Length: 296
Ligand SMILES: [Zn+2]
Ligand SMILES: [Zn+2]
Image (cartoon, rainbow, N blue to C red; front, side, top):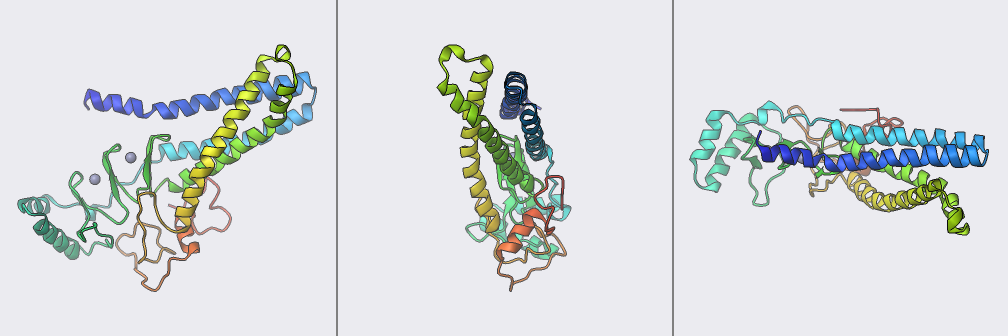
């Protein structure tokens, strides 16, 4: 691996390190400064401090779990049948005109009965010249990860990973739990924030300053996360992705994308909201939103 690639890999982790540092500081500000010193020791409100701590840890654990699942989930390789053999690659590369290359690719797709339905804007077979594969539907090549990612949504720098087939559910849950966590922190620190402005500056302690900053930071994160979460809920419900893929031809009810050999195509299915939603969150009525529940 070249020096440049190593440097880029290290730089790629900086946003994750930044988020982790913010979480660690907010843990100290909320748990130690607010709950222990301000609420329990100074105000002698032990019950309230205990309640704050329990709720805080529940939200924090769910948020962290979803966040680190999004980061550390590997992307499965593209199934072997989509890879071109060396002979097939030679056949494609022997043609110097793109329309002739497309004819070869169409022939290979037909011979192998590959279940690909989406086409390029020009109507051609989607082919990755780097990985030498015929791209399955919704598969895209990520230049950062340097591989083709199944059902790629986007490459997210905040998780230093692609958001795709395996971790899209975790990504949406990460946004959802991040919102709940930040909302909880903002609401519970708000009374202390108001109190801060009523007292004189000379009466403030270091804990007061940290609580005020924590409240502002949590409110700011709430606003930025809610916008992103709304976008992804809308995309999920309409069975779309950030990259603009929209699948209109396949029944998504019993076959989460992408469809591989054996998956059937249902031309009657109208891609109802329920079907599209179930491709992301599984078909379980109760466990789809629980981060530990995986369906693929
Ligand atoms: Zn590729
Ligand atoms: Zn990527």
